[in-house]
Image (cartoon, rainbow, N blue to C red; front, side):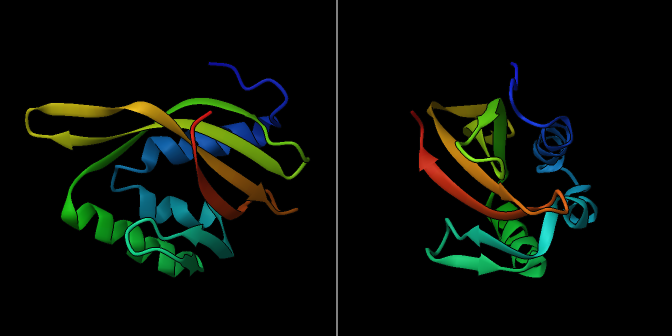
Length: 126
């Protein structure tokens, strides 16, 4: 998996974000990856979430109902200097093992000048 054209600091941040998503580390990592006023999709209820605390609470809700899993499969530039696209496979962790979706989706990230994610969107995979 290569990330040609993606700034190294951004690649490192996104790879780490996907690594810690399903761990107890996610809450402490949140301030190091998301802007204070981050704009995030609410895939459970529709609409958008605003701010780190709203995203933290949203993730907590996701983990209260099951154990979601997201596997990073690739990174690429998103057409402008501030955008990076992550290709991911969604899944769930169950006692019997992991189940992964057959198709991928794209997580599109907009970054601020501070290097933090300021917006994320989910799109159907290419």
